[in-house]
Image (cartoon, rainbow, N blue to C red; front, side, top):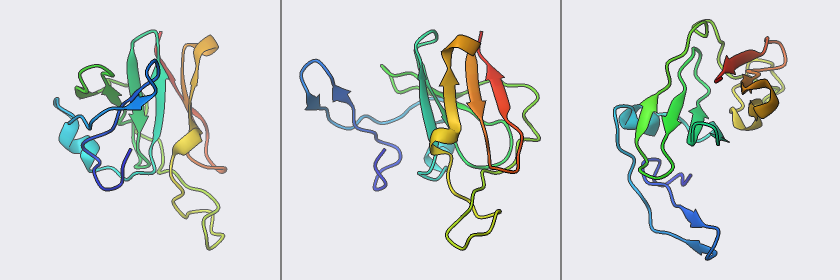
Length: 130
């Protein structure tokens, strides 16, 4: 994820050890993805061969990214409309300061889904994928 270009990520070829050229996102949710801050959380889910990306806004918006075509869609979810904005301790020490999602969005393969903990004073939201 490059702060200079939220719409064109780099890819890395593990076999050759080379950084590929940038690839433009496409799909029905690509414009919405470009509008979220860089402080998102991303997990790869091998069972569905997709990256799932969560921004720090409130609600249940989850982006599904095809790792081959870079097609972006919104994942259909239920029961997440009340998920609060991501918060943390913040630079000023206030509990309501936004801190970014990062590792608060975690794939749990043995449970068949992704857990999201928006902040220390919030409940965990679990997104079941199987």
